[in-house]
Image (cartoon, rainbow, N blue to C red; front, side, top):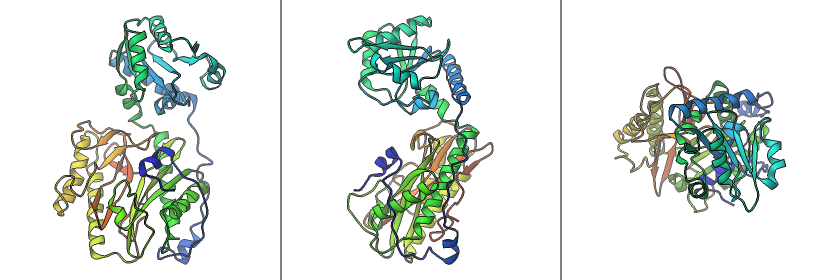
Length: 418
């Protein structure tokens, strides 16, 4: 079974199997001796209740700054981020009202109350609705009780449309506004602990790739390689995998539907990642199975220069769009332009608990970089019918620049991990 890159990002890892293959050019007695993988997450300290409380307090401050009274979240990454409550999305509305007056207040289907009590933090009030009742009237009641019967209720940006229309019908006195200004401002700036999780996740993925590359062989399927990568992640204590494309398929940024096994001198574009304590990695490496041609090497060098120049341009106060512009200029100046002709996508996306999250490094985004923001840096050149090259490392904005997460930066087409 084949998976698209977007499907991979959603599931965060694929089934695990173990294969034995003969080593290729990436193997040597030295690398084999160093290739034993061990659990790297056993000593990781998870987030504590006070970490979630700090997030809620920041949300309250932002609500006040934006003259909003409360934020309503349903089952989503945002709900997990603020409350550590995991709840599936269904037609029955469940969620929390984070408000400026006190602790978050919850609504739940009545028959789910006991399950909700297992998950909702102690001391938080839960209000229930029966199957023939409106959950949206409960939300209106909460808003009235906090003194905001006609106030502004911010909705989490992933809330489904039936919640919006239900509130508009059953709570018409409320002003419904976009809550992205709250969620994105909180999640976009990572704490030291969050950055440590991401540093480790990116390191694990790079080590998994390096281990799997030792077993490349003629005829290997993309599923075979993914299984090796998934297994390597598992040995290090993480759930993850990779999404490889071979030869002409590597020119498709999100994959081709054409099935192709590995052949001599194929370009391999490998994209994937894992998570540590819910925080993601996203890494792409491009290598050649065999001896790179002059064109493959030239294009790789252009993409590497674009990635390096983009990172050099990172510093607090620089607009997001400028990082894309710097990388794109390198590619255009090398003859692979204009604009999106060969470098077909933005240079990077925000990353954290979701593989892709706001903000984005793209033309038109004038948001200024701040310390603690985390992004991918992934320029590419894609030549349909021949091959593609993409290099991707995640970075964090520091006080005076940017730093790649997980180290192991590639330095040449045959040195994918420095």
